[in-house]
Length: 313
Picture (spheres, rainbow, N blue to C red):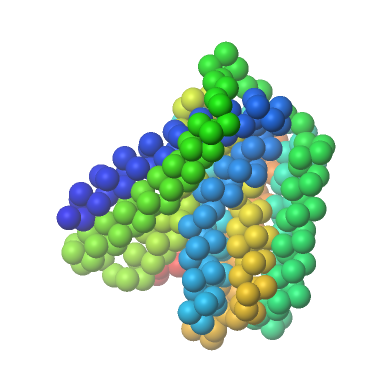
């Protein structure tokens, strides 16, 4: 059954990613909003739904530390794994808005998380309000001022849909990504255990990558269909959303405390997240300006493999 779950999960992910992309392109055309903004808002919200569900459920069950681990692990995987695979498949060209707005907001959110959690190992309710408030300000700025950040290579293929079809594709696509990721995670965990793989290895690979699978599916499909603005916006937006919305809303529900048995999140993992997030900026400029190519992807992938190895060993 494990193989069946994995295969069905992959099918759902492909279909869900395709439907979500259709909805995103249609919304961009209908609302006359740049695709990078749709990627950083609607698509990133939809693909971050698993993190939000897991974190809020963990908070309600009293396992608040899981919320932090889920977000930090997912943010690392988004940039060091998902972005790596995406740019290995096809280079992404970026413009000024990336280093003037998108990347700085991601770094500010990451640094805020660091200061909120390192000293007292707790994200208090008022800190959750600050995080979520910053998200609202960022969204207002995006919708009012953000310009196109990536050139659309195939605008003639864009399809404008009726509103009801756009909403349907958005809902079904989001559900397809969520359902597919659940099936793929469950099938992979079951298969790994049957093969004798330890829970520690499963946790840092299958589970931590699992909540980033919707981002991977959406980004790969977007880049294959030449919708690179949505692909890049999805990943940056997802990391911002994970910190400001997922942890912000969770902390508003109940303070998020990192228990003593999860101190590696503060002592190790959060530094990896900060380092990888920061490294994206110089990679955009070197060796070729305002471009992420296959060499950058290989470097990011190698970084992720090292992170997993050091975490497991």
